[in-house]
Image (cartoon, rainbow, N blue to C red; front, side, top):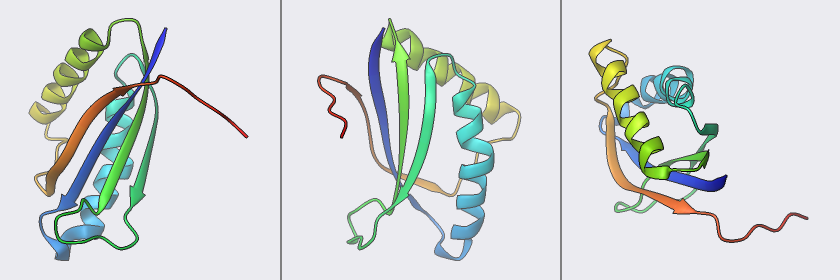
Amino acid sequence: MEKYILVVGLNCSDSAKEGEFNEWYNTIHLPDVLETSGFVRATRWEHTDPKKEDAKFLALYSIEAEDIKATMKALQDNLAAKSKAGRMSNLGALVIMGVYKQIHALDK
């Protein structure tokens, strides 16, 4: 089983609705993503001093999968179904996204 991390950097497209965006992301979106087989953990982070071009919010998703392409396709299908069910928000503005394969880990 290989380990991966999905990195998603976002901004809220309407600063007046940032609280609403964070509430949706934390209570609806993260659990929806974790329903996808292979996704084992999700954390969110807030940039402490973002510049205009930076993502203010970062989501990290830990993935354990034999076939990352199939896992990402399952995520795409899952999120398409969630969108049809009205569970997506239009407040997120994507800045960066990528899937990274773990090549080394060191714990203290």
